[in-house]
Image (cartoon, rainbow, N blue to C red; front, side, top):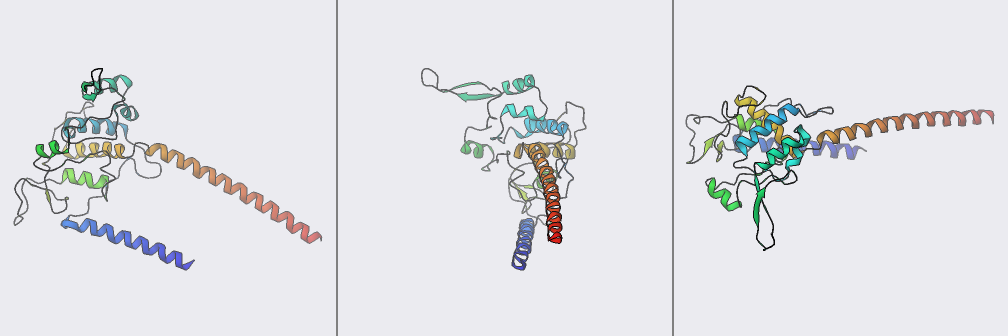
Length: 262
């Protein structure tokens, strides 16, 4: 038993060491810890924030970044109506075919279509972004150690000028939280970059927080369902354990009475 306990704590220590190393890479500070609405056992997505975050993605991020694992119909899950989803999809064109003549053609997107990529291929994407490849954002919060905290910190960590003595390479931008502090992506979000439909004040912090929550949802759209299932399983196991204990106590009591009578 002691061997397994030692092994467990050794694993935890190793994970902690690796995580700290990753944070330390490039002299980037650890992102601030944000209390996200969806975190915790009973945490759920803030639907209003998701809709605002989608608006930020659509108006700011979608011109460079793809969302390969999300279909237009998935937007129903964050509060859009079927009619709204149809209208959103119709704003985009996707390739379809072949037609009767064997040719591919473009048509208006439907709710069943996946989000179209902003570039025809990776080479076109790099050519339009100075050689840098804009990553797909579907799983971006899962691909980083600090997840949502890191993405929020990155979006709010741009500085107009690097610190004194810091040499910034041509075509690069200074960011407090990016490893090495040099990032090829220019600052994407500014005050009032988006005029929120619900009237929320569009500060850099608010815009960054909302789009981060939206991208946390794209990375794990079934999070709420998983939590509900997990809670049901825990309740079932608790009831089962209680019944097993009662049966055990009654059976043991009968055996003790029987032994006493004999």
